[in-house]
Image (cartoon, rainbow over all chains, first blue to last red; front, side, top):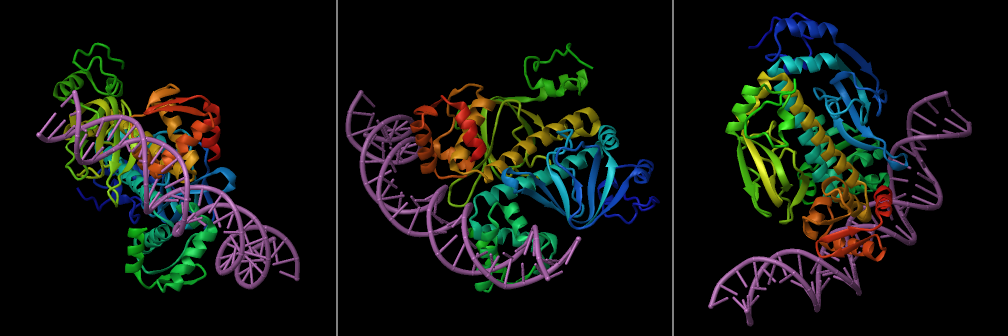
Length: 231
Length: 231
DNA sequence: CGCGGCTTTGATGTTCATCAAGTAAAGTGG
DNA sequence: CCACTTTACTTGATGAACATCAAAGCCGCG
C-alpha cells in the first residue's frame, strides 16, 4: 500500500515509485541509506565498455547515451536513456562486464545501488523481482522495436523518427535544443553526418522546421509524422 | 540443490535444466503435470500478433520465426528461435497482447505453462525469478546486438552474417538446408529478395559456397567470416 | 589567435531497390 | 495423374538513394 511515511532521503526522488509498494519500509530505508548519488556534466563518461558491473544504476535527472565502439572509430549509439530509465540495463543480468559505454549528453544525476544487494532483493522479494522484469521487458521492447523500425526507413524517415522522438518523448515540446551533434544523430540512426545535415536542410527548405544551431523548432509536426510513417 | 529424483514426465525434457535447482520437487512435479505440449508442422502458426498472452511458451524442438506485420504486406522477421528459447519472450511481461506473430519454420514442439502460474512462481521463488531475468536479458541482448550489427553492414556482410548464424548457431555444420525462403531471408536481414539471390549467386561464383535449391554448403568459411567482419 | 572539431554544401561514384521477364518448383482441382 | 495456377527462384537493365570525397566557413577553447 502507498507509503508516504518513509523518512529516508529518497523522499523526493521520482525513482522511488518503482520501489514503493514493492519493498517494505525498513528495507527501503536501509537501501536508501546505502545508495550513492553521482553528478555528471555534459560529456562526462559514466562507465565504459569492458568495465566490471558491480552497481545497479538509475538515471535520476538528465540525459545519457548508451553506445558501443564500432569499426573505424565511429561509435554506434544504442539508445538514449531518460530520467527513470535504468542505465545499466542491458547486460547487467547477463554479463559481468558492461558491453557498452554510457556518457552524459546533458548534465545528469545517477543513483547507484550495490548490485549484489539488488540481486538479493530480487531473490527475496517477489514483487520487486516482478517489477524489475516488467521494466527490463519494456526497455528491451522499446530498443528492439526502435531498431526494427529504423532498419526499414529511408533517410528522411529516420530523421523524422528521431526528431519526433526528441519532441514527443524527451522534451515534450516542438522547440528544443538538440543534446547531440549531427554526427551523434548519424551514429544513432545509422547514417552519415553529411546526410543528417542535408536532410535537416531539406526539411527546413520544405518549411517543416527551423534550425538555429542546436535549436530545432518544428512547425509542421503532422508532415513530419507523415514522413516518418511513409519513410 | 541438484535434484535428480524428479519423477514427472518432463524427465527427458532438456528444458528442465532451467527449472531444476530453482524450483522444489513438489512444485516442479505439479507444474509438469499441468504443462501442455503441442506439435506444429513446418508452416503452422503458433500464435498471432494481437492475441491475448495467457501462456508462457517454450520451444522444445524445431525452429520458429518471430515476425511482425510491416507496411506493404511484407513482414519483418525479428529473430529465429531455437530449442530452449522462450517463444513468448518479448512482450510477455510488458504487454497483455502479443506484439508479434510466431510460425514454425521446421516441425516443432512447444511446451506451454499457464502464465499466471509462472508469474506466481516468479513472485514466490527468488531463484526462479533470477533465472528468468537472466534468460530474458540474454535473449534481448542477442536480438539487440544482432540488429545493431546488421544495421551497419552492406548486403554481402548481411548475407555472410545470416549464413554464419545458421552454420554456427543453429545447425553446427557447414552444410545445411535453409529453413527459410529467399524472401524470408530478406525479411530477416532487411534486403530485397532479388538481392538475397544475387548475393548468394556472387558467393557461389566466388567459390565461397555451393547452392542446390535450399541446400547450402559453405566451402570457404574463413572468407565468409572476413566478409562478415568487413561488410 | 590559431587549432581542431563541428557544420554545411557540392560533385561524384557506388550500392541498392525497383521493374521486367523468364524458368523452375510446388500446390490444386478435375 | 495431368493441366492449371500460384509461388519461389533467377538474371538483367535502369534509376534512385545513399556514401564518400573535397572544400570552405564557423565556433569554442586553450
